[in-house]
Amino acid sequence: MSQPAVSLSPATSLLPVVPEWRRMLNRVLGHHGLTLGAAVLGLIVLAALFAPWLAPHDPYAQDVSQRMIPPIWHDKGTWDHVLGTDKLGRDYLSRLLYGARISLTIGLVAALISGLIGTTLGVLAGYFGGRVDAVISYIITTRLALPVILVALAMASLVGGSLQVVIILLGLLLWDRFAVVARSTTQQLRDAEFIASAKVLGASTPYILVRELLPNILSSLIVVVTLEMAHAILLEATLSFLGLGVQPPLPSWGLMVAEGKAYMFFQPWVIAVPGIALMILVLAINLVGDGLRDMNAPEGRN
Amino acid sequence: MPDFALELCGLSRYFQLKKGLFKPATVLKAVNNVSLRIPPGQTLGLVGESGCGKSTLAKMILGLLPPSEGDVLINDKAIDLSDRLALARQIQPIFQDPYSSLNPRKTIEQIIRLPLQLHGVGDAASQRRAVKDISDLVGLPERLLRQYPGQLSGGQRQRVAIARALILKPAILVCDEPTSALDVSVQAQILNLLLDLKQELGLTYLFISHNLGVVEHLVDKVAVMYRGQIVEQGDRDAIFHHAQHPYTQALLSSVLTPEPGLGLPELPDSSQWAQAS
Ligand SMILES: Nc1ncnc2c1ncn2[C@@H]1O[C@H](COP(=O)(O)OP(=O)(O)OP(=O)(O)O)[C@@H](O)[C@H]1O
Ligand SMILES: [Mg+2]
Image (cartoon, rainbow over all chains, first blue to last red; front, side, top):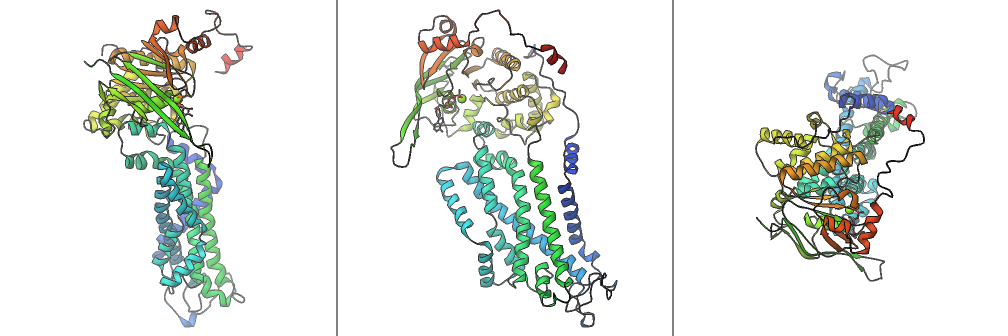
């Protein structure tokens, strides 16, 4: 080529050279709900990760002589048990820290399982349409007609509650929102010209679905992940409270509330402490979810 | 040398339109018995109003939509939809909307490089070099390669789409209204680029537009489509100066400016705009 093909001036644009991550960071920090939620959630995650170092006592160690010690803000509280002890003399703070591990694990793993199921179904329905869509939509409707808590209760009482059972049950039950969101976002994108272009280039259908389409619907799915995480954590607490979820002596927060319910009139902190922990965790996750949804909204470009 | 780079033989596409649960479906003949021939290195302009079936025709040529009847021949051979990779190396599209034709989650470099990866052409280093060369060719500054489509202007995006279409060195480009989503001034740049590329690479174009004015400087032949059928085709000058079909005449009269040389109308307060920019 002797002459560059283009003698016309290539359209120049002087975009601000603020790096992408900087812009993103500013945007996240500008969103107070997201900042707060992420900070609180981050603290809880750290507490759960470092529970063995942070916990002052063994969460399973019983000591009958130390039963029902109230938290530090009570007159009879001691620094040895900052949040008091339960009816078996186990340190409440230590149990709370280890309990965070259970809640977070259940929330994360259940959301991942249901995310995998729901996203697969939704993407297939949205992309192929027609018969595939009709069948999958029928499955989604069937699932939506099931009362989650009743089915979970029935199944848990049938199989027997345990950590694994709760995770799998919730994973198998909470995929509906993933499917609905994945289906509608896929429908919007399947006729996009970049998909057609990949087809013309000879890309295989799995490549198109996973590499071209999925990255574009991921941001809406992340929001669903947070919603379903919070949902799963609350359902686990409910199941455990009813005795059909995580079994003693594991320090599930729902179980802690259940074990304390006999004392709630005279020692209300027994249920207040795990209850408030649960509330803060779910609130933080929801704040993060709301924030991420706002972040996804168009920024005036893109 | 084959006689025709691209040949359409009686190509038709029908759509079943369901009017209601108990009413019989009606058939829409979106493309109806279209036959066209483009010799290698030539440009055929396909014009017609919105909804006359131009994009449907393009999709069939690209193998995105199976024809109801008829054949698409490339270099005198019917296209083989079971070998998409081979088809992709012969014919590539440039779509109308540069805002939807680039995956927003990939960098420009990844987008232009994808065809090479899918086709296993060369190693990583030679692929990157090829991306750079083709970007030069279409007038895309190198610094844009690391950016995302959202950060580019419409004209830049269309250059990316052209680079992606050309990187496998296909002989034929199907351009489906490649400039109608662009600003008027950018339209001219892209059209000139396509013209330069045609001369430089000896490309064959099927150039689709609803605007006769757009194709005037680019095409060798013109085919006019109306309601799924070709109503008139011929050399550019014949169509532009001696149109036979009343529909073509109507199209022509709608693009010609009332008085040539009149220039653009004066804006009431143009000084204000000059300062603002
Ligand atoms: N999948 C489909 N199902 C039913 N009808 C369709 C389908 N695709 C296109 N059509 C119809 O076929 C006709 C031709 O559509 P097409 O997109 O080819 O028009 P076009 O000439 O490209 O128009 P434009 O200039 O607006 O892009 C239209 O009436 C359209 O409604
Ligand atoms: Mg069209």
